[in-house]
Length: 499
Image (cartoon, rainbow, N blue to C red; front, side, top):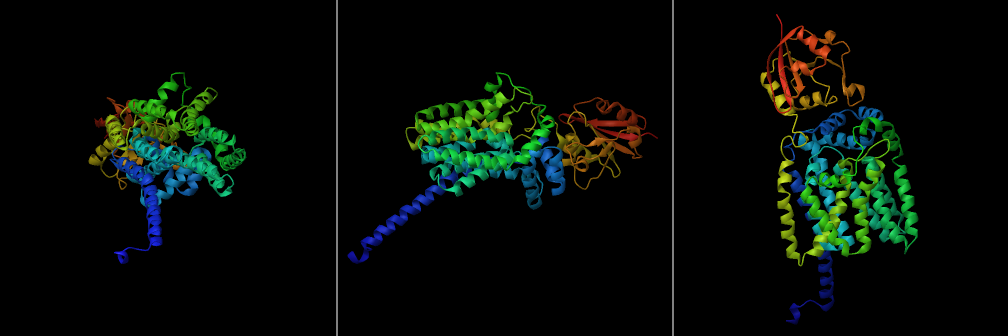
């Protein structure tokens, strides 16, 4: 029997190798499972909702040449320029279908779940990290903005990754390489969304707590934050100059805004309540870790609320989605602390998933990306496609949707179907802007087309009533209406030239 047994030393080496293999496998599983679950949830019916108004802007701007994108940034939407350039490169490789446009967001959410798990492990232990990562996947807002061709998911990833890089830098305060990576993370956050730089408030809380024992970390932190923020200086300048146009629609928040923001942030009042309660359960755990997560989750909305009582308001829930990873880390720790055994965690997560199921389902309806359930651009496009005749022209209502109305219908029309936009003077792309301009003299723009489609907002008895007066008069002088279709939120009419 002795001949069949390996030498004692080899047995020890084999045991060590096996233990190291188990640790590596466990480390991978820690972040892989939350990432896979989040991606699976995000991919479910990702192409079902029609593109929302802001997503149409992303498709339009990112579809321009790089030179046009840069020129547009200089005129408007400079704070989102980095996202438009990323999406431009993505579209060049993967196309511009609804699913392709949203895939960067879905992948970013999966990456964020991995960061949540790894951060939770560092702060509260392995089981808490895994629980937090899986819980993150169940938050309805995660699915909602995994289905959004806008930068919010990428911002969440940048913020979650930067928090993880800060923890690594604090592990080795003498490593300038780790501090340098943290500075790059700060710059990435600012390039994707300037308001998300308020995440640094939570970072400062942690650094101050650590600085009581090791003062040099405060100097390293301040230097790297300065370097990271300085790197986005041009974006800050552009954003400040363009703020009046980009955020003027955001109302100054009242006291109730601090209460209402949480249900909006999670896209579910029930989920918000459950996560916040679980986060409160975690308060009995490691004080430093709890303060870091609580500050990262709660302080940015409070600061943004306070700053929004000046000339400009920034208090809009989408701008604060980057706080969700911190909530998930803290809630994962709370659920881990409250569960009596590992087996109890699975039923708890399943219950949370079932409670949020109605919210998850509503987010995947065709018109889910519109607060009022419309307009149904795809239905309008189907009507036009069904009855289209070569030589047709089209007129859009550009009053209420600030130029996005025409873009929405055009998005769902077949590419080969070409129609002259009767009253279009200069397109948004030609102007390096988000808005197009109409002909100054409507009667001069009416051509000799036999038929003209009219697409306007709302359900109108006469679609021409929704157009500017000069355009309506110019059309009535030469055309008569032959019929109209009224999909959700729209009226699609067909005009025929008078004999």
